[in-house]
Image (cartoon, rainbow over the protein chains, first blue to last red):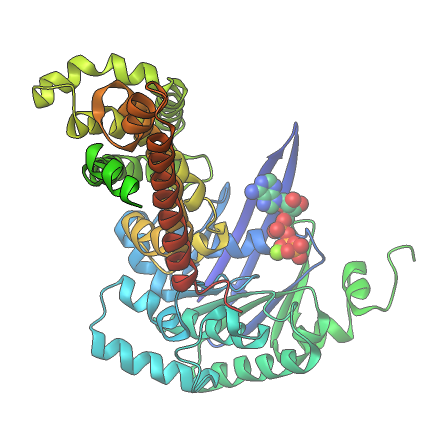
Length: 248
Length: 224
Ligand SMILES: Nc1ncnc2c1ncn2[C@@H]1O[C@H](COP(=O)(O)OP(=O)(O)OP(=O)(O)O)[C@@H](O)[C@H]1O
Ligand SMILES: [Mg+2]
């Protein structure tokens, strides 16, 4: 359903050119929880921003259910966006709006009727387990609770794909476990396809069915998580697994 | 006390307090009508804004900087013909509101710009990813997320205006500045100047305290 073919993206960084994505191809199937793992600076967020149509790519194609998303513009792009929910690295919640209003925000943007919004938001609050927190403001929530709001907000428009950027890297182990379980439950009940970006191998082994290993913009290997983790074919995967240090 | 009441009546402090307030509030409102959109345009046309436009941004910056660099006292005199054309007179508090408004526009544009720049780029990205239009990003994200800061900006602008009204007062606009300078200091009537100054201080304090209170009250980001 989500297909990336030969994606290239370069950044000009004071006189030098950085090849942030170098011939990246991926195929994510419907209902997958697809992990993209790599060290800091590997190009993970750049990849996510490309899929989310937040930044352009230099060449290659990204298709969602056969639609080439790089060609979408203006109103058709805005309209298409409800198919993709994004949970960002730093929550990015609206700090002056309460939990309810944050989750309702994407629905209100496309003028959903009030009663539909109310019903959907309450549904989402129940899914992510934030009952009783509707009127709280993000500033008063814990990291795990903020992440739940961000997940609920990203799911509000019932997207086909949920993009998750380092959703657990700022959370303690117990909260991480709860959030991963929540995501797994959501995936199982709603069938939403998830692309999980992370630098933690534990996240991949816990919930990702498939994984791609990204290193300096290049996909080193990809496949079923069990295969990749048991028989890593690249050094970077072994490094991420902690089996080998970079210095050998 | 009797002397105070006598001075108050003789120099018409009630009317001049009213004139000072008029010369603060009227220009403040008009200057925001123009300064707020200008501040918004500065932010969105910036290279990191939602509608980057180098030419528009440069023009805006030049205009705003130019406007801010002309000393108010010069602007006051320079705009007399324009004020006459507009209102048929160049004296009195309403006439003074014309240069006061114009002097305040670039100031407010910058104050608004500073407030709006407090919005995290990530929040803007999130809104774009949720399908927000540029207009929705401005009205529902920029202007809502920065309300406390915008209110503080109103206080800063209003207080700057109170200062300007004193200068305008010296050249025929009336107001407390006029009493303090022309009838107080120039005629060596220090108690009159003193009362006028106290009243100006009170106005500034009321603006500062009430708007700071409101800003704190509406702020949901920095709650203890
Ligand atoms: N807008 C940009 N301009 C220039 N260089 C950029 C830009 N965005 C990213 N880069 C560079 O591209 C590379 C990949 O960055 P990216 O943010 O995708 O890494 P990441 O894998 O998400 O890292 P992290 O785990 O630290 O979040 C980095 O070297 C970064 O400096
Ligand atoms: Mg990143």
